[in-house]
Length: 70
Ligand SMILES: [Zn+2]
Image 1 (cartoon, helix red, strand yellow):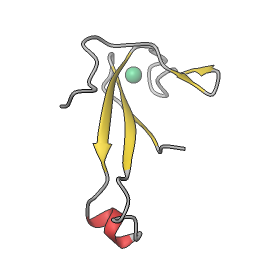
Image 2 (cartoon, rainbow, N blue to C red):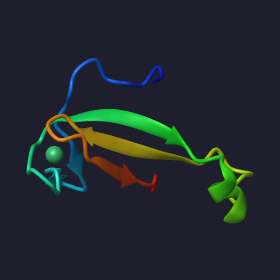
Image 3 (cartoon, rainbow, N blue to C red):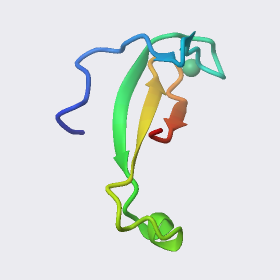
Image 4 (cartoon, rainbow, N blue to C red):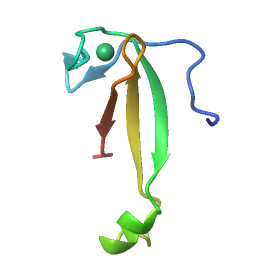
């Protein structure tokens, strides 16, 4: 939940490739942004950054696809 959440599922393109769900091959996703300033990022010494990951949740089956910012 946040300001960047889309109002409806969207098509996603990653480096010129259309994203299809790895489970059901659907191509509409809910966009999420996940903060990583958790125990995991502290363990990885990333807690000095504003580490966050982009997540795309399949509109059909709910599978969550994670992408680290580049
Ligand atoms: Zn799916």
